[in-house]
Length: 164
Image (cartoon, rainbow, N blue to C red; front, side, top):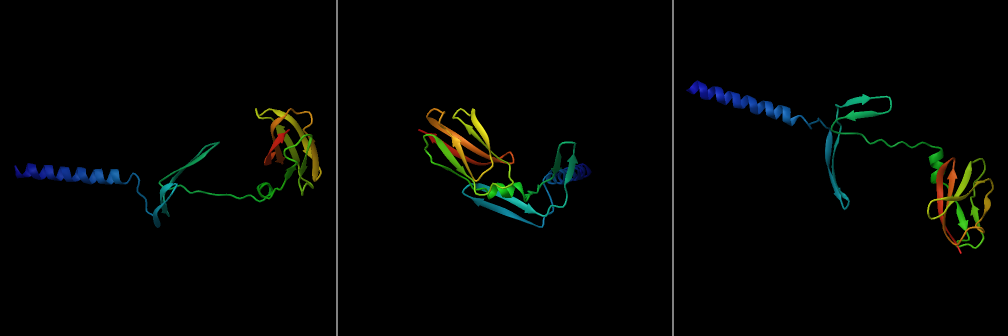
C-alpha cells in the first residue's frame, strides 16, 4: 500500500514538473533588463536583450518569431528630407480668379500640382517650373477645392482653396 502511495506521489510530482517546464517556457526569455511604462494613452511592458528568436523569409516577406520584436526606424536622406523642408504658400485665399502658388526653391526639382473638387475628382493639373505659378480658378464654380503640390510624385503640401 505504501508503495502504491509512493508511486502515485512520484507520478504526480513528475507530471507537475513536466507541466511547469512545458507551460512556463512558452513565453519565457532571458533578458538583460525590462520594465513597464504607462501614460494617458495606455501602458506597455517591455524587455531588453532577448537572445533567441526564429526568422523565416519568403520571396516577398520576412517574419521573426519570438517574445520581443525590434522596432527599426530608417531615415533616408534625400526625398524625405526635401519633403520635410518643403515650403510653399498659396494666396489669395479665398479667391475669385487666380491663386498664386509660391515655392521658394524650385530649381532642378520635379514639381506638379493637382486641383481636386470636394468629391475628389481632378479638375485641373499642371507642372511647376518657377518660384511663382499662377493657377486659374476662373472657370470653376464657387466652392471648396484642394490644391495638392507633389515633389517627385509624392505629396509635399496640400491647400484648401475657397473659390468665391
